[in-house]
Image (cartoon, rainbow, N blue to C red; front, side, top):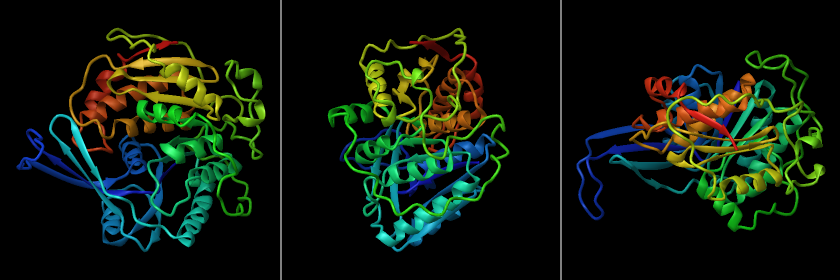
Length: 382
């Protein structure tokens, strides 16, 4: 199964209005409340697609109980905390304006309890998704500690974070990092360097019992070595690549393999002349096995050990873009689960992202839009 981690979940409230006017009074024509937070959005999309998924993270107070009650069939194991889970408000008027409450304070003991629970859940995980912000009290290198634990268990990891959690997590060597354009720019502005020191993690738990790969994962697809060794350094040909000892990628080649690119009719990718491709290459050299950089309506760029691609939607889709990046992450996760070639994963990610925009709330996709766009997304090798 795919294990999604949401350390700072929320009760996500969406208001639909005709036009958002600053300092004005608005009549809300539609209200939706649902579990929020990037990892829960990913879990919701995966469940809608029929993929095996399990959600975990931190929940507390009456709001946390409401979030758990709204998970609507998504299997979950959350660590309870004393603080109250936050709320987020998104106002949609054709575009989206968000208001995010701060997360609750997490104690050291609560964090250690979650780490123990996460380590236990890894025994049944085939892919891990770490996404979203971290609440106060969670160490800035908390994601890095989780990446290390997943690596020790041989489970591929996708990291979707920003700021210090991104910098620390990247240094731990996740298999895929999925920044958006703003996060990639922020990482570059911070110096594009890994933070010093090891992850702030408790002593590793006892090694998990031997187990067979999850049934949804192809048995021919080996897990990463338990010692975190890297793949063949010959796959890292970029001139800015870090030394082999400083990098890691999935074992035995990428779980999502490279393949022939078959551009379909309709649309054309936006040239990568804005520096995104170079920045993604630098991020991969800093520790990621692959980097998938999302660029909103312009699609995405991918840099992997087998090549670089760009993909773009064939047409604009109006609606709420709040959960589009999380739908992209869901597509990457199921691609890792099933060993899908990279170009196919990227086309799937673009179509799912567009289908998420067509839905009024994050965490779901408009399946007719997805099916219509999936075959006409244009993917090209960079």
